Structures are given as C-alpha cells and as structure tokens.
Image 1 (tube, rainbow, N blue to C red):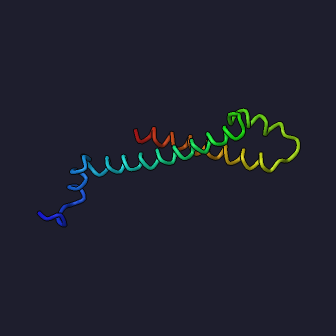
Image 2: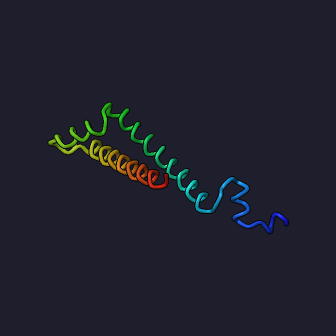
Image 3: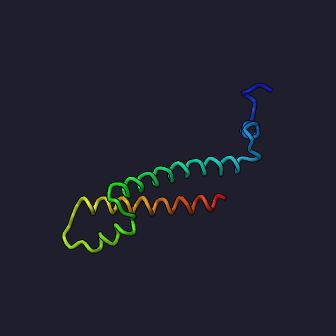
Length: 96
C-alpha cells in the first residue's frame, strides 16, 4: 500500500487515535484550551489594569452615577471574556 492509498482511519490510527471521534474530540479540546487561555489572559490584563477582580469592578460599575466610557467599555469587555471563559469551561467538561 502506498502513502496515497491510506485511509483517514489508517492515518488517525498511526497518530494514536482509536477512532475518528476520539481524534475529533481531542482536536476540539485543543481548540477550546487555546480559546480559554486567550480569555483568561484578557481577564488577567483587566485585573492588572484596574487592580480589582471582576466582582469588585461590577460593584464599582453599578455604583457609578456618571457615565465613564473607559469604565463602561472595559467592564463590558471584561464581562464578555468571563462569560466566554465559563462557556468554554462547560464545553471542555462536556468533552471529558
């Protein structure tokens, strides 16, 4: 058999995967871990920038009486990253 006659199953088996579903699950896990790392890095940057956790920033945000676009933008972005990280973590749990 030449290299061109190998099936996808043969190639996946040579890479250590018992079946295509296992390979797909592993690939999905790697993609999700990459996303989670990006989201967590963004969350850490916000924590460093503002010197507080998202929970504390949420308290400050809700207490603001005057509109502050810098705080608004950062808070909403920070919240999005936290929500996205939570979704990815639940997706990783489903793959486990």
